[in-house]
Image (cartoon, rainbow, N blue to C red; front, side, top):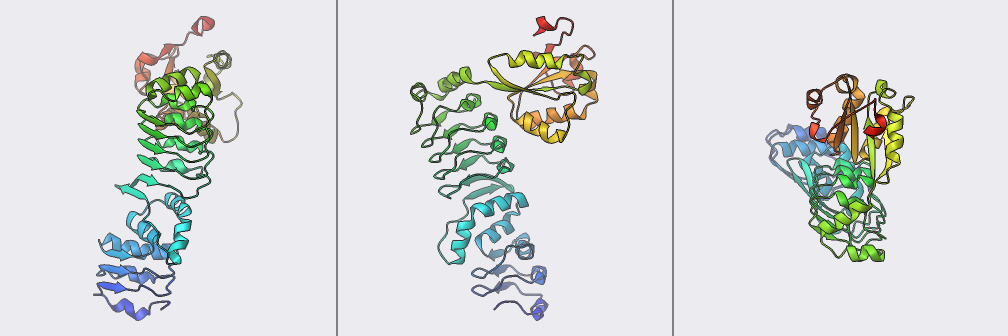
Length: 366
């Protein structure tokens, strides 16, 4: 059977329909309108991945019906994930999808979903060479295993997985971690064993909840090999002394000259603890929003020049503060002369962390 006859849509009271082991590629749209169907079996066909088939299956699921279908179609019909997420899952499941078509045994999709959110995912031995640049969209993940794959690097968006508590990256080919890894401050269990790290990644210094770290079977240098035997708190303290940070200066364009931003940048970049300072130059052109997004998420600290303009009338500064909150980046306010601390408190910037900017005694201020 390759298709259903239209006269079947008159079966308004149809409650159970078994179409398994046929050669159907596309289900008729009217099948989803038969609202008495409680059981629909369409497994072992050649169903295509398209909106028509998905909508029919989703219609049955919405009525709390039962469906039997190819695993990915069934998975999406039940969970209805956003398109960009299900497309990534489909890419990783390509091998299993082909195996299923050949009637070979495949395991269930190793994903746990809670409240419509992907919270656990096990990508163990999937022969994955790389993760997509937008992998950070799975930012509700709490448990993630990506082991026994030939992965050499992780995308910068990996740092957006800030709800991760358990992360297993063992048995890959990693040599470095992305700078954004410092944002994964909820991780308490991290496995980096059997990779190609020559030193303990300095990004780990920021993982304040880390209680269990496995970095064995890596070609670490002698000093880091000795340090790796210590408890995580001592490892983090060792890494903190080695780590350099990147800083983003958030300021209104009109304040660039009066607040001597260029000189402040030059001073900060001379400090050995600071590797780079990002700031908006007066003549910055192009896609500023994209530049801002890329720059902010690479930083570990934001200095906010607080003035009447930046606090009350600067969409760019407001956006930078929103990005800081999104990526869990601490913000130190530098209060200008034309506002007071209560003004900064309105945008949730604390006096306890702040400084008063002294334009008249700039050298002493620095």
